[in-house]
Length: 77
Image (tube, helix red, strand yellow):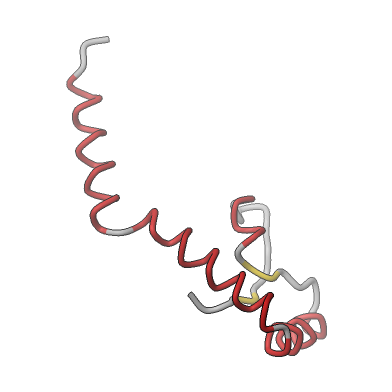
């Protein structure tokens, strides 16, 4: 649930755009760090979105998806 500042590449999923801060340069990274530290509302929003996003990857959700994959494979085409 902590705000993250990181780089972006073509492999970065688009859905992470609302969860992370993507500076283009090292100086922008430093500026972003200061902004996030000062901006309590932005920091809270980034944290909340990160926690919500991470819920998709609980062991329970992973197990559900895994079981569903095997059930789908059993279905005749």
